[in-house]
Image 1 (tube, rainbow, N blue to C red):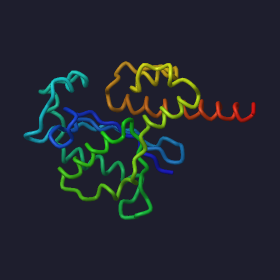
Image 2: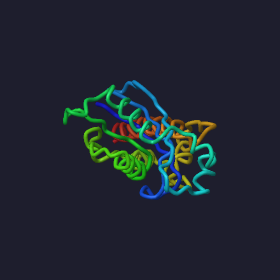
Image 3: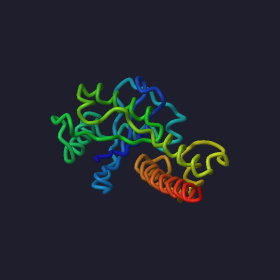
Image 4: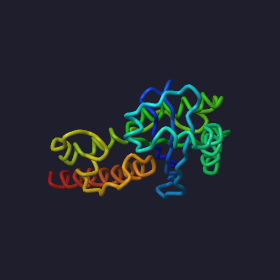
Length: 200
């Protein structure tokens, strides 16, 4: 199975008026990590930059305007994908995993559109897998979710005793953490279910 774990950092929450500025991911095939990447995108002219988003990303406006042009970064992203799949083969696509997948999917779809590509569906199966929902389900099954204050990635990591990276909110750090939490929560849930079934 070909999995693509993806996280984005953006200049705001509206995919039509704000910009994707970082796209990071992990290519996993049959359970083996084949490649990691982190790509920066310069905003298109006229796209809005929200100060609060910049504070979360810990980057300033001048810095993002020095990032590579979005078309160049988009081409680099497609080349990475095509090292591991064939966009002309309708049976060869990635299943995408992301924390709050709808948000990342919207921004990536918009990037395809802004770069003039109609081939979003050639690379990815739909629907995307929302890792946040999956981790939530696993935490419920093993009894940990009711004791958590919220469903944020950092909170879920703490509930799973997964160490937080120093550079939280960097897209690559966040998707590594997402994958680690997903794997650990799945394992805990499986062991809990097996133990309960065995006890029954």
